[in-house]
Image (cartoon, rainbow over all chains, first blue to last red; front, side, top):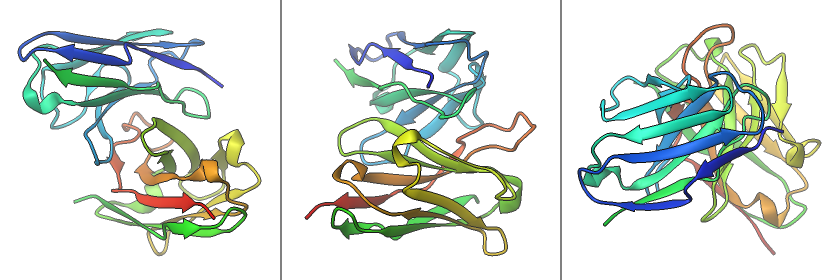
Length: 107
Length: 122
């Protein structure tokens, strides 16, 4: 199975900060990567697909980049409503494994 | 509006069985792959199984192979997960997920249900 290593596991930042989360795959997954946001008690929400394409309706402060094994998710200017846990997921090979998540908190 | 509504969760004893269902609406169900993803209490997400548009191919994570069966009824716009020989480690919220269209660039995982909780305990 492909292992997805996400870092950091938790992050505290201030409103307006630029926030970056990384995800590393244990083998080449091309650009087959999603980023999700999960708020407490809710289902995950797709933010970024194919590593860098933003899902319809998602604010433009969210972005993704990378290909192969190394990927980055960025929030350009953190907002209070961005408090959540963020997950990457690869879908290049079955099973479609997730990273362990990054819990984002506001300072 | 796309909707995925799970049902069938509950408390079951170790070794028991449970069948989860997902009612889909607001899209052409038979044109999409579908998946189940679970989340143990306080833990991360785990992909469980998926099924192709016509139900011809099914895939499972190793930990549920031989115990869980994914199926779909395209006439009823319904996805199911039959879970047998349940273990304490299967305790989780189970999500029904729309998982893209084979051979296209349609986003995978674009819609999720609200989840249904399965608790395996004596």
